Amino acid sequence: MNLREKYHIPHDSVITIAGTVGVGKSTMTHALADALNFRTSLEKVETNPYLDKFYADFERWSFHLQIYFLAERFKEQKRIFEYGGGFIQDRSIYEDTGIFAKMHYEKGTMTPTDYETYRNLFDAMVMTPYFPHPHLLIYLDGSLDEVLDRIKERGRPMEQQTPISYWREMHKRYEDWINSFNACPILRINIADYDLMNNKASIEPVLEKIGHFINQSRY
Image (cartoon, rainbow, N blue to C red; front, top):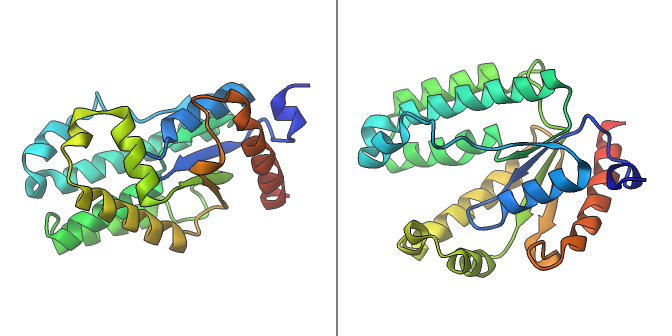
């Protein structure tokens, strides 16, 4: 019996991983996909035509960037379900609206008109009965200190140069977002409860929670 069958996780499940920078979304995505023999859906940053422009001029390109993300994530979500599920998804379509576009609007790097247009488009595309929402969103939860430790540990130069105040704000925005999120079932998992880097077997308690939760939600 494989792990998917052992923990009664349906073969067509679509599971999305969410959480702030540094909580280990990519690590969890790959660990779950390997354990369940699922495919992964990863963000394609290198093909984004707006990213460099955006970092050079937030005000000029924030709306364009968010529209691009919305279109790409929408197409990817449709592709996953048309394929028949069996996917682990790194990052959700919901975070762009609930966190990043909202942040640009509140900080003045996206105009009120652009933000309203973006929100209207998002609601028309995603917040409808016709959009295939994930069967489960796993929110990787951790304290700000735990997140900062992980960011420091992985040592990415751009992240090391980012002020702690930014990570504090992102942590707060993610918490506010997940506390009001209701588009699909949520399973919160604390990042202190497993160690996938040093103990691959620590994925099994996570699988057990997923199996229990996803079957409760779906049937």
